[in-house]
Length: 261
Image (cartoon, rainbow, N blue to C red; front, top):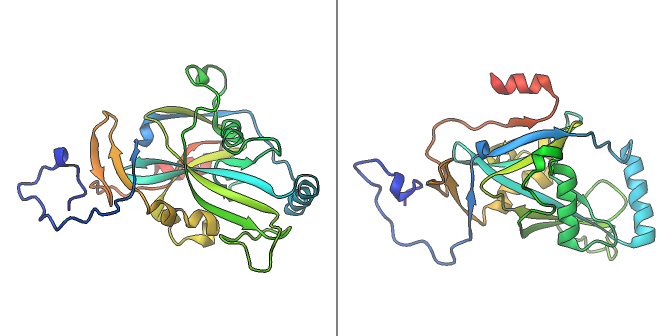
């Protein structure tokens, strides 16, 4: 098996073809290059809670009035050097999170999720010309994380002694189109983080984000260049350049300088 698309293979000695290994083949997702997307900034979106304690207190109030809180976050995937990259937000130069947020009690799950994605990443003004509200292709739900109590810990299962979890967070894969304009609030940064940076790196990214490579392993990928040609396929790319995390938008000058070195 070759990871290079057949029409891109240039070697005079093609690799040996093993017996078919395609039964129950996973779904294929087409990934477009990072350079296809335009990134900008928009007005600051201050955090609703000044501290972790205040955030948990608000969760408790929500539970009293509306029951379990529903949260949806999106895994947006593109590629750089034929390696999958995840678009995620960084807050206060330290805290990483996926785009999305908790849903309002009256909102439908998918439509409410699209509204939250618009709040975080939809452009404003002239940058938004040609784009409509809720223009997101929400794919499979890849994971559910449960908060059993009014505390920071979440688990990928409901503990046996818990009958009334306080929050359920779903992670959805978002299939990006060939091109799109995205804008990030001024007080946040939008990063493109390669999968290998997330893998087994819960110390930096936490258990939810570091699990993303495992979640995406269910898919095959087709890597498309700027001209729309499939240049590589799962399981890996052919480009020898090492991918790195990139700051796409935000005001952290120091991090941008490091990225350009």
